[in-house]
Amino acid sequence: MEQTREDHNGPSPAAVYDRIGIGYKNVRRPDPRLAALIRQALGGARTVVNVGAGTGSYEPQDAEVTAVDPSQVMLDQHPGPRKVKAGAEELPFADGAFDAAMAVLTVHHWPDLRRGLGELRRVSRRQAVFTWDPEHRPELWVVEDYLPEIRELDASRFTPLADVVEALDAHTVLPFPIPHDFTDGLQTAYWRRPESYLDPAVRAASSTFATLPASVVEPAMERLRADLESGAWHRRHARLLEQESVDYGYRLVVAGES
Ligand SMILES: C[S@@+](CC[C@H](N)C(=O)[O-])C[C@H]1O[C@@H](n2cnc3c(N)ncnc32)[C@H](O)[C@@H]1O
View 1 (tube, helix red, strand yellow):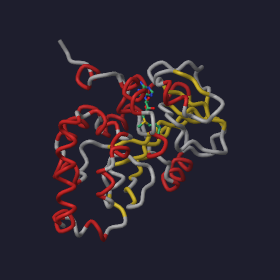
View 2 (cartoon, protein in one colour):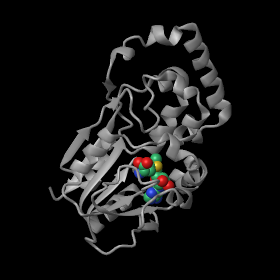
View 3 (tube, helix red, strand yellow):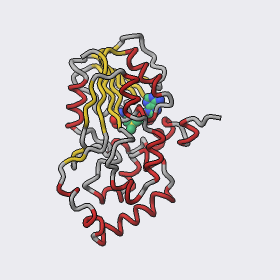
């Protein structure tokens, strides 16, 4: 029998977010540089549906936004007035109901990506999807040196970028190198601030860390702590400390009316 994404990954994504959503907002603070890129991609949209909206990061302040998410814990932290509890695969809106649709760091959680992206195209005239390409290299040093288990987990969750581009019939793919002081605490955010990964609150706001068992993560983080104390980490990654940003494979995929 074919294994479903949920079988492989344990609890449903909405259930994972019902658990890790608590405290998410403190670590996952929207970064103004990514916000500007997304706003530009949405064009002059006046009405926007944000699918997998979570706490509302990156929603344009000058548009009327409808937030959609299947996790009640996430929706409860969303400050907006228009909130709908639903999954991307079945959006309760009429065809062409919105000028634009956005989906940020969420498509890898959807049980049926093609259907979800099809729904985005059905309900909006323009789509902007921010995601991560699992085939991109280099990998974050956390994965290479401490937690190779992340590689397998992410490869099973994230869809190759080419599939997202094809399903959306996208016309533009914009790289987003992660700045060294990126404020949104996603998995790679702290590539130049290694001590941050030792903080359990930082790890709890990343679904990959939160999905792996503590028996795997904690010994790896103890090795990182020892390498930071001995100076081994700094010797190995001296060149990283000189960089302003690194392309870890994050991409904004834009489709529809331009
Ligand atoms: C990493 S969070 C991103 C939230 C927000 N877009 C942001 O950038 O902070 C992923 C979100 O996807 C939501 N999600 C999970 N399964 C989904 C589905 N089938 N359809 C839509 N959203 C889903 C989760 O509940 C969670 O809020």
